[in-house]
Length: 276
Image 1 (cartoon, helix red, strand yellow):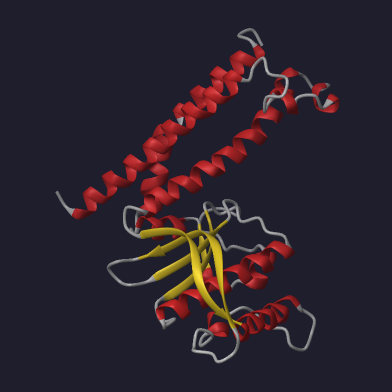
Image 2: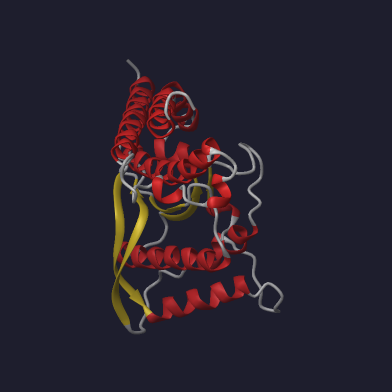
């Protein structure tokens, strides 16, 4: 059996287990809350303006918000488990960072933000090349929680990834996310003594504009360079360390998605009754 076949089987097993666990947990959670006035769905169905549209609309409106949030959490955990098949995975970075580095980051982000000013800059990975060089300014230790810090044991590459499932960012979040990634970059470069094998990335689980289409969200592009984006298939391919990672993940998810719809049917029957 080839390594590619073994890798695909491992990927499919992780996806299948994630979907099964999610469907079971989501169903159990909401079924237990049917008679709980403070349950997730019951707390959201008292909007009289939605209720006026009918019981079905009222129920689906409440459930959709719960489904969207919890499904995103499932995808994040699944991605971590997939990454663990091929990388050393951590979710924090800790070490020294120099005042000179934090000052540089602040100036760079201000240049990105100031779109109409003379000092405006469009993001490039070259903007922070050399920021990890030794400094003589004051230094302090800092810890950052990270969505994904991946180390590839085969190549020695280090990836610092911020994952936003759908990619939604407002202006303040875009700046703060890039600031956090740049600080992690500096800390890691200081710890390793080199920045040659460090890459920072902004990732999405799917492309809100359609798979294969350009990612156009202006708030993201204001602070992130093209080379820093891992949109949809690029993210899953990296996480799976396979050029077919996205296709495998999506195919296995689709094969098992009926388990989620079956769980939703059970929840609907419990809340609306069989005759609704």
